[in-house]
Length: 262
Image (cartoon, rainbow, N blue to C red; front, side):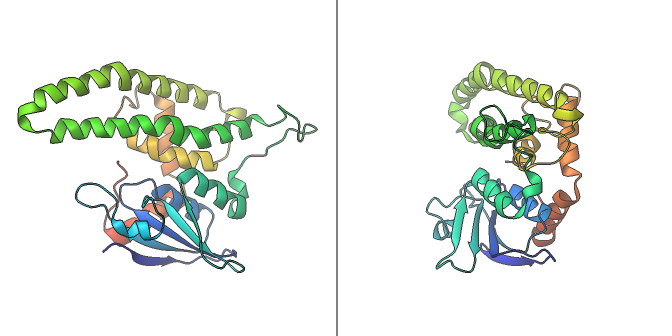
């Protein structure tokens, strides 16, 4: 049933009651991971996609676009819940208020407030917070749509539709995926202070945002352990964190299983 609820309790003190509106096969799992990483109290409301793959209409009662993730926060002084949509906005807001350990130090010593005075870790953090959704995810969504055309096009036109999809794959998706995987492999190899994450030695909100597109691409879209060992190891490292595992187990306990794919 869409909108079913579950409560998560922790000993962390916080201002406000947080509700995560979680949709299966969506990017909302990253927000659940973030809530677990910050050891926050929250209510989890579960929604399921319609047979055609669209989000259920109940989500439009929370936000006009009816997409997920969405969080709502009830706090003293608010006349109505604060509703936030878009993964990047939600991650930034929660880190600002509850998870400062997930944002790198911004300024180099003695260069506070100066143009170019930011640390490399922070510049990477700000970049990958936007890269995950602005650059990488659109290619994965297009790939998903192309796969749907392959498998769901009417039989009589399938030779034509497959030819079109194959051309889009070879001329557009494959070279763009390769450029991105090569770039990310290089970013991991040059992580500041020989870190194992994209922004350095420690997990950040940017890593949490990157977990979904990379998890979805693993074994697909050209990401293999042999070709991109650093990306592969990075994904495994993210998924090995205790808070990631708790977030997955939360869904398994409620849904019976967890599917990380698009």
